Image (cartoon, rainbow, N blue to C red; front, side, top):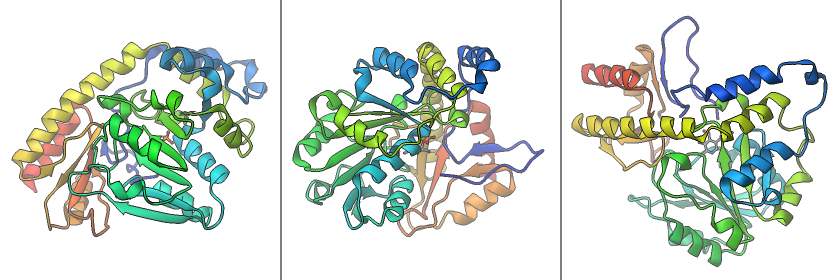
Length: 332
Ligand SMILES: Cc1ncc(COP(=O)(O)O)c(C=O)c1O
């Protein structure tokens, strides 16, 4: 989902769309340079065999349980298009990633919004929502909180429909639900290269799920959904996990420092397992503060909804960027 874009020609501290502040692996840049040749006249592999084979080795999931998407947003869109007919119920805890709502509306589905409690523990009403499709963003955006695997597995057992665990931010968290895919044919786990792998600009996502379920997604997928450059980059990124993990480790250290500093500034900060934090001042509309930061070229995310208007979602940037943000907050 698009956020406020920086003005050209100005140094902007961009902490509003959860991009990685560190560059992708040099191996990715080499692979991209190597792919810039006459073979660009050829269509890309519609089934992303090379990428799926590499992902199978990295994640310990058979290649026939993997589908590559043009960003995990495309995987989400394919799921909704393949599974949801007009009037079908689609459940998700709210607040969460707003694109679920957009997709369900486009398909004329019925959104069943189950409010998260204050501590963001999984609401039991989710299992009872009788939905054809259930989304769980884990870690959740914008809260950054994580539902433990044991709780997700219990939900998967109780649901009749498909459970999609959107793990866009999971590399920054302590555990992943990926092992559930082998045990539960109704579970799909989504990953993206946009966050931990620093490749938001190339649009690469993966869906892990039962081959029959993925076959349904292929029927509604554009043939050539990932271009040759994205495929080359994704394979190379999976060959240099150390680079990604080092960047993740740096982000986590800065996340701890940011959360402490925001707490000292009087914000309530939920424990985050993602590359952003939600900082709140209960009962205060933080829209004016977000706009004041923006006028100083510091972009953070404010959601003008009743349940979120007292919060700012702040991406964990470099230490220097976080220092600029904190200095601006101290002045405002
Ligand atoms: C929870 C969540 N899921 C999916 C996405 C989309 O990621 P991608 O860039 O892979 O389309 C985002 C992007 O911000 C996100 O926050």
